[in-house]
Image (tube, rainbow, N blue to C red; front, side, top):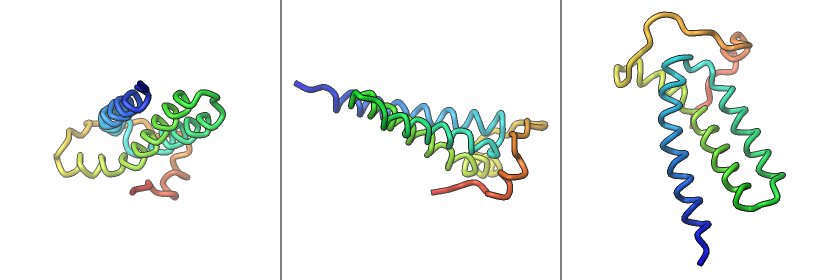
Length: 111
């Protein structure tokens, strides 16, 4: 019997659940302008998966990277949901990310 498929499915399920949590928390504490950093982390994880010799570990890195890329696209959507009152908004100022002027010119991605 090969349990790899079930293990990858459970890992995917866990990463999706973790993605919901970190997107909500990151938008609450930092704001949606921090979206390039999880995007870059996702790209690095997927790129790293190309160089891992074991197929299982490579798949885990690819799944985690795709989850972080998805989360980066959800940051702006989460900010809109917070504006609508579906989630709490953090009172007060949030820290500005590095290169904030460039990030504002690019605009947040969405799917």
